[in-house]
Length: 276
Image 1 (cartoon, rainbow, N blue to C red):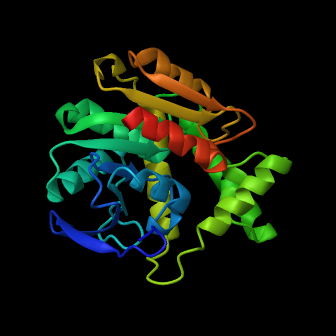
Image 2 (cartoon, rainbow, N blue to C red):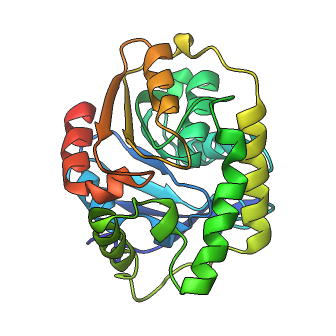
Image 3 (tube, one colour):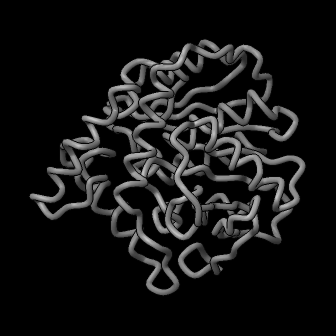
């Protein structure tokens, strides 16, 4: 069983059916909850990363409220998204998990760490930053510009948003986007534009928030980013490192927001070592 063909399940979370996929269910490691990026559905989880982590740990990916195949209205704040994620974890019956949050998922992961620390053993924060972080409130025009460009060039917007515009970046983008098409059957619902707008509103509000006291986070935290992240600039990663005591950081050279996808083999090795 791989992420390419694992079945989609649902769980009732406060009256809403949340769609999720779990891989590596028979593995002995603590479950990893993967919190995905802006606009992402279940079908936009990188199968190489999910399969790699599932070789040791159960890993659960899910569609946020109002996204993909999960019902309900998309929350307009990161705090509400965190409330949903906490309820989802508890609906599955878990009392302790590891978190892996990418981009928007990293914002949500921080909220969970601050509000329900007893629920989390370790956390990986990739391509993300703190509340009130530099340029986070300005992500919307960056996204809209590349979404428009993608319409004219007939490319996926992630081709521009996640990767450098050089030979290595274009190759990594092509390979990553091809991997997302490997699942041929039982794909989920696609994102609706109004839900993207709600998520962008939530990110803008998060970027305008007052800074949170991240020094209270005592769990081991691994911070990962590319040196040329244009969505959540790298200064936000170094800010997380400075403010979360004992945290570790990996910065990938010649990589952008999607550094973990460009360097997926190296990332999986580092993540599994961190989660030992």
